[in-house]
Image (cartoon, rainbow, N blue to C red; front, side, top):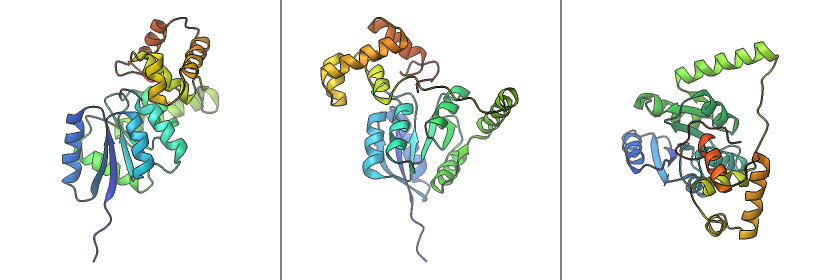
Length: 228
């Protein structure tokens, strides 16, 4: 009797020690095979495209491109991609936003090894998986919204995918030339995106964009995530 095909996993986390720990944990379980390790969201998008793993285990707060925008791009390119979030940020706003962007599950980093492996196996089979506490909160929140409004409430889109990328890079201190190089666009196009950002957000300088990005969870020092 042949052994079942291992579940292929890409790990996306900017902390090497976290990736090493996850590798050791998953490789000790014969059901999983690590096919890639991404240090930021941009690498995660590329690995999802080229490696087509069964599951992408995604952190949220990462440099260059955060996990939210990475998830949006991965799912837009491949709607069948299975992104399972593993984050230190488990607040409802993070969970609901990542779900809206296409993640099929959400776990906090203090999750036990047993729950983590169950979650990866479940989403690989096409199921959704949230840690018990998160699943309970989501259910209660949806019920309360329906009770108040008669239906779910969706936050309107604010920024495009490209604008979100530019915003994060600007907030991380990249000059227009560096942003253009990283995104493969012209400096003039970067300048246009920056101006659009300022117009949409009614912000008049780079310092203001940086403060906004930090407050809205675009960078690692974020308090919460609402970028859309």
